[in-house]
Image (cartoon, rainbow, N blue to C red; front, side, top):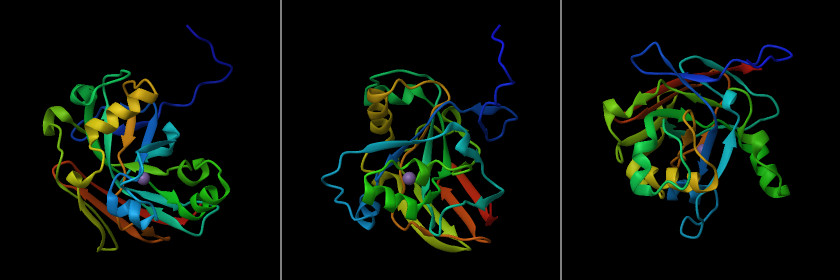
Length: 232
Ligand code: MN
């Protein structure tokens, strides 16, 4: 048995819908620009850009339902409502038609983004980590097993701020559907049980501040709510 110089940090995990068991998180991958209208609002041409990935630290994800402090170093905190895929069986070079066999379940997540730091990073050719991977930057609602809901490829994905709808789209408008996202990710890295993939956000992203209530829904899958708290 391995002996550590101090007790290792607890494993990051996310609640499972209708269960006391939790989903242990290994790695967190995120797709950039997977809805054409969002790519356009970010100043990009969705016809010309292949999908790309970035990551968040495993312990940046957290259970939704509570309050997330407004993070430091930003004046422009954005929400990005996303379908989250939870990997249950690992593998490399997974073909799109085999992807579903690797998926344990699905959830609703919000890819919180320090948009001003992201813009600086883009302008200066620097990494996105500080914009995307801050503490508590990935709240995820209780995950739902595919054994219960199957593998949805369509359904409304929407987010409101203080009751006002800000994002409203359909999963079927993803440029790269889940089966392709899992396949593409697995060509670059070997996926393993516990990996989460945030599959991109539709148009309508925007800034929020302390006291704002964010409520998201993905039809037939999950609902998510968080409140932005005072500055950390
Ligand atoms: Mn995102």
